[in-house]
Length: 111
Length: 121
Image (cartoon, rainbow over all chains, first blue to last red; front, top):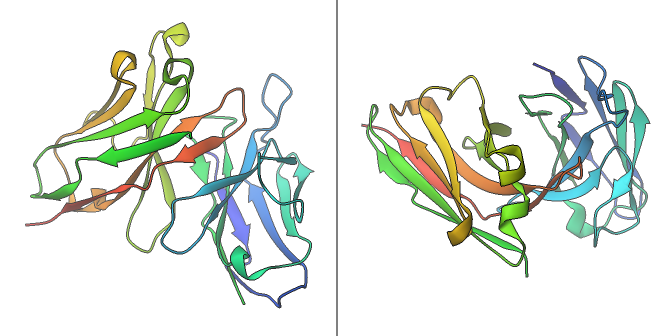
């Protein structure tokens, strides 16, 4: 199975300041079709997860442009350019390159 | 509005069975792969199972932790997804979410609110 490792576990942030979360996979996430199936999810307190980013860097519909994703191969990053209060929650990276689908352990973003 | 609503969770004894349902609306259910993902209390996300669409002959896949005990199925005529859970263990205690996988590779959206399954004597 592909192991997804996120750092940091917790990220205290200041409103209006940037934040960054790293995700590393135990093997390359490049699929045989040439795509990299790495997504980022946000889970606000008491809510189900919400899709933010797919295929490394594509913002899903309705996601604010302060969220951006980057990376390649085994190393990926989610950045929030200016943290807002509504961004508090846990962020997960997930891979769909190979079954079983796996998730990172989560990074808690708190003010 | 694209929506998923789970039901069927509850308290069950170890070794017991439970069937979860997920009602879909607002999109062409039959076109999509559907998945179950669970989250143990205070823990992270764990993928449980997938059922593909008719084009892919409704093939299924399972996490090793549930293979042989859980069965995922769908009824496109009722736009519903199911998870039959047998031989339940304490470690199956979790909120179970159903979610749509938008292929190719566009990730999981939407997610239902989840239904809590508690396995305890």
